[in-house]
Picture 1 (cartoon, rainbow, N blue to C red):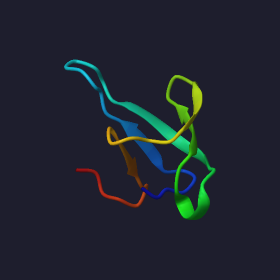
Picture 2: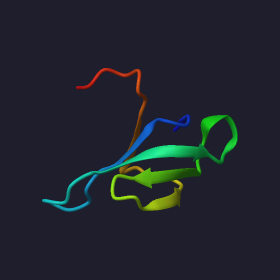
Picture 3: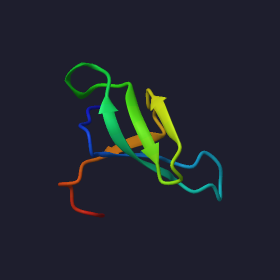
Picture 4: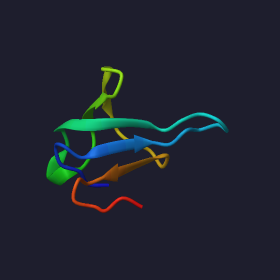
Length: 65
């Protein structure tokens, strides 16, 4: 997984009915775009994350699916 500042980190819901959490990557703490990342979520919460298999990075230049 590689990211740059300004990319979105999407954490998929883990149970039925749970919504995805979407946050903006504000800082890349690993080397060459690798985790951990500082992420600001839509509710204002910030966290340092090393994303697992339930997460994907969306780059602003990617078209919406």
